[in-house]
Amino acid sequence: MGHRRTFPQSHRNDPTHAARLRRRRLAVLLAGPALAIAAVPGTVAAAEDSFEKALELIRMENAMLPGLAMMERMSRAGVFTPAAYMQFLAMTGDADAVEASNEAPSPGAGPDAPTDVCSYKAENALAAILAESRERKIVMINEAHHEQRHRAFASLLLRGLRDAGFTHFGAESFAPEIHESMADGAPDGMTGVYTADPYFADLVRQAKQLGFQFFDYEQRPHQQTDATDRASRIAVREQAQAANIKAVMDRNPEARFVIFAGYSHIREWPTSDGSRWMAYRLRHLTGVDPLSIDQIPGTPRHGRKTQSPWYSGIERCHDIRRPLVLADEGRWLGGPGTDIAVVHPRTPGDHDWRLMDGYRQATGVRFEESPSRSLLRAFVATEPADAIPLDQILLEPGATTAVLHLPSGDFRLVRQFEDGRNESLPDILTVTSRPAGDKSPR
Image: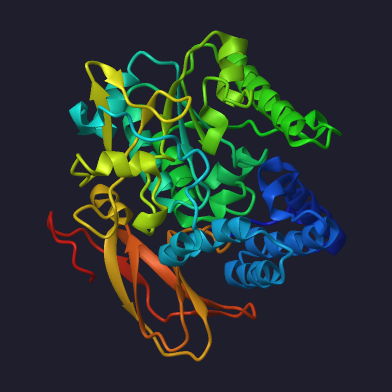
């Protein structure tokens, strides 16, 4: 078992200090406006109180299922937006439930595909992006906060970018304590908010192993505004993010940067309503033109009836078997306000994004039947108890088998219940490498 994080010796048995530190850590996580969607107008006070408790369970107590169950009850009662709940449900691997809940295209789904899109040449997304990034100082890639596949793709891209000389990695989700959190290489509740997702946590874990320097850039409490209209709040937040990134760039003039953000933050041009997002503002503050990679419009929907017209237009004339980018005589097909759009294949299919090009393996697990819903979690055996798992999957009552997607290594398995109980499975799970092309669960 890895070394367990502890308070300094003088405070270890001081409950007042422990509670104060925990409140400070939680306040940092709640300070970022990224979670403002959690409150429904007219129910702000009740939603914030309950949401704070749910987030504390998830982030500070590593009690994902109890916190998720609280959010689920709030969502059904109408005091918590379904979109916010789905961002956390996605962390359990229940992709079907998440996608089925999305009846409308994701934000930023974009207009119709170009009428001549069939004449575009399809290229391997990873190879093309890495080639395009060779002379860039900044590469930005976005995600939908309910899409684990976006985090998986970013992990694969990050490896190549490090080899290409990129040195610093910043994410919208990172908390100011990112350096303290990752000192031992194991992401935990201090790492950030969306980093509670195993795929996001492993993105950070791998970035640490690759030697990236971390930085947070989310709007600080002192940078917030008293304005109540959405446009003003967005403008202040985007300007703050851009200024915070510029400050890191000024301190590291020779560095090259990878920035992982949500949705529209990476748009380099003003939108039709006049909004100027972080990437636009950063360009004007620094004079540096970033390479912006958009994953939103090129992600397939659960049902074809709700599929964005952008994706449908491409799907009609391109065989999407693995992540692609499209080019026409040197001109990349981008998303709204971005340089390059990644087009992801449907799953299941020939390409299973959960395997991450062979980094993870489908691994079958058996366990005793339970009458209660539970969450099966796989932790790196040598990491501290408060680390984020490598994978987890929601189990319905009566389940006796599950498939986890794990890299090679040793893992301790824990089954978590809604009442907060954690039951460890008796044996360490060892995952070994397998022959290329073997995708059958073990």
